[in-house]
Length: 266
Image (cartoon, rainbow, N blue to C red; front, side, top):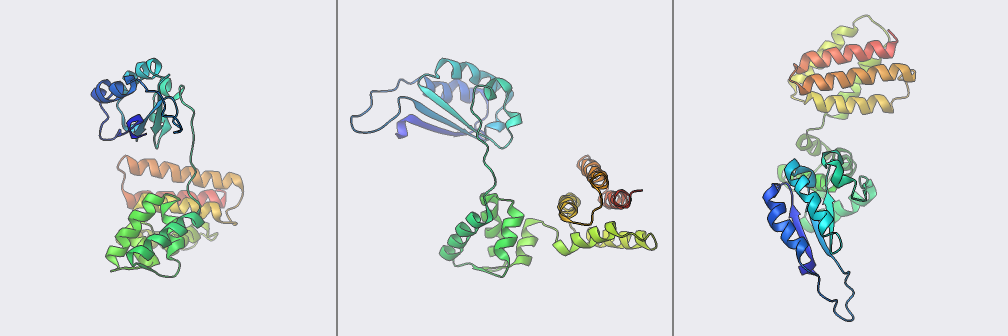
């Protein structure tokens, strides 16, 4: 079985020379007769992990190899962004999209790891870890490892928020409450003070916008769908501005003011 499976990490071996040498040589190898009594499919399996990191030239070179040796070789592309796989390759494949893991499944694995490694979990630690990882078990394990090292084998909610770069929920809900406030008097002063505290504490503005979006979508007092759309549009604009290098404090003030106006129907 091992002779019929080749796994490559395309983030490391991503050039056209890999396709010309390793991939083509493996794909062209003939498949021997199956051993009696041992179930084995009549083809080889080539697995390219993180295939979206492959260069365009390498992907184009792979087209001919797939067409020529498809009878004896099956290709598996594992990627995070299917849009980065060129259309000629994507059209030749059956796509399988995997959803984020459910919190209950992640909790079972995390508890197993903690038991084997001698790590103690504080109250709400599992729920917090599931929330910050977004259903990504690899990210959850990495965050758990960092938190355990920082906390000396003790992992709690505060430590997880620190190592994951998440903004504390009370900070996000505080900003959202100011944005939802209906009275105009003193509103900008409170908003400015909140933004100054956020920047002073070193929280990432982009992460704050992401959590603020979730907070607004989960709130029952956001007003009509049209007002909520205006608020989300303001968040999207601020996120783009931050990506291209805008000042974080100014963008937070700007987006908070826009969200206030949108939710107020102004």
